[in-house]
Image (cartoon, rainbow, N blue to C red; front, side, top):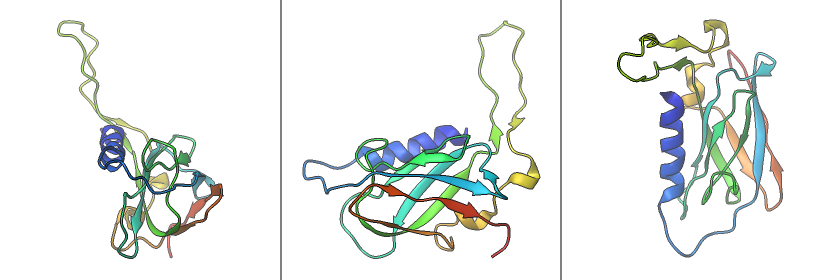
Length: 150
């Protein structure tokens, strides 16, 4: 369910707007927690720190912790500047719908991430995240090594 929400969030960030597009630069990276790739995957969003025109970039975090940011398409990049970074982790897979009468329905959610590897809430709190990223007018590789305590 969270992956669906992440895709909707990213699509919403990318789907609005019109003709005059600001120049964006490729942004890729990897998110780690406790020295390992962030488990479960999820989403990442860049939030403007200052008032600015244009769209905010977002991306999908893959189960291996890698991501690519997108503003007008899913991975075209971000406008330059400094951004607040919000990371959401997918920790549970919701049950999948199956055809009636198939006998294979599993009505239970599936735990994707053990409690020890759930990232702290602060990284998904838009107002209090400690993460920032600076995008330059070039190819950008930005990695985030999340920690349990500040």
